[in-house]
Image (cartoon, rainbow, N blue to C red; front, side, top):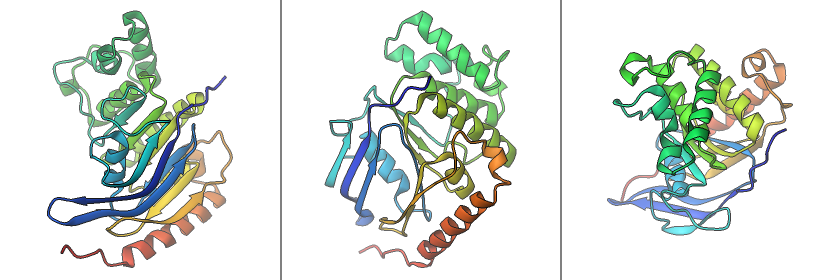
Amino acid sequence: MTKKASVGISISSLGHTFPGGVTALTDFSLEIEPGEFVSIVGPSGCGKTTVLNLVAGLHDVQTGAIKVGSSGPKAGRHDVAYMMARDCLYPWLTAQQNAEFGNMIRKTDKAKTTTRALELLERAGLKGFEGALPKELSHGMRQRVALARTFAMPSPVLLMDEPFGALDAQTKLVLAELLDQLWEQEHRTVLFITHDLAEAIALSDRVIVMSQRPGRIIANIKIDLERPRSVRALQKDPHFHEIYANVWSLLEQALEDKPAEVV
């Protein structure tokens, strides 16, 4: 039986300007329902990661408002987990210790922490590598450990910043399939950043397309593919390719817009 996340994300009229005058976001509003998987795509530099960092509480909100559940963003919240593009594993810890780390600093019961980490490492295809150090693992294997660490934490909100962006095509498909399976089991609220349109469509309930900087939403596309899904099988689904063509057309429009000049 799947659980449904009880925490949604509300973003209203968000704007953000960095020191030096670079405006990253303008009038960005987005509602994410509890348990919904939403991806954001857009041109490089359009503010996708800035949105994620603001939701995570890593930047202060300048204009507009954000609610994660019933409260504002704050770094270190236990109900929010953040997975970055790099695996960010501790080189002196084993794969198992890295997978346990998030729950260990949250002082979760040791036995439960170990059981959960071992379960997820096995799901990620890393059974037998629990005692390996990061330097003994391939890049794809390290990213599997990072995914296990993220899902090991019981946080109902997952923020994911291009977690598979640096992987080869085959490994990306395998990990996207694993992410989809884990999400189907627990239905956490996911805000996912990617440059890969196929990945966004295959995983998401909705795909948000952003404009050039300063970033704003130019399309909010509901993905009406049946669930549960097989990420690999979707590559042969004609409707998947229809959606892909639509999203790509919208992204092309975004790419044709000139980014705002710094003043």
